Length: 243
Image (spheres, rainbow, N blue to C red):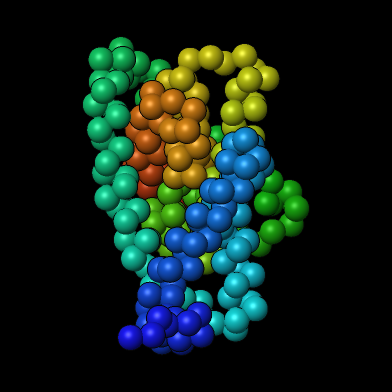
């Protein structure tokens, strides 16, 4: 039986949801190779490279996003199990977590409120509409939760997704450099800051630094999503931005 050539493989993949899954894995693999080649420079974060590669691929081939996502959704589905799996390294840091519950709680509430208000304030300063301000407010929360909050408060979920991705990438790129400049050495402190501000992408970067930093970042990401869903609508209502 003759070996299939590249044209045959392309025709087969293009007609099935496997195309989206395959190209996603290839894009991330290429991005990670570039990342390692650059000696793990945060500027070349594999998420950034993979997103750029996918955008270019879809533009060049003319494949609609909906057709791509039929296969890409399989990777999207794994976000849930991956988030739950963060409980494993967190359990390993449980003894330290019990000692830090009060500063973590204070930091969490402060981070949620300051993050939302600085985002809304900056958008208002540059003349953004109320709808845009509401879309930006939950930008520091993991994507599924941010979309739900945005829809609830009257924002645009599609714009919120863009801001969430940009925020995560930006945090992952500058986070570790900023910690070095501030001479912060405690991995639990760095992890909490990364999780609150840069959610999933920041947590992935934190795990590359250390398991402790990743564990606390995962905890902060989950708690931040929960706290934002409760605090943000109340805060915006108190400010008269929503009814």
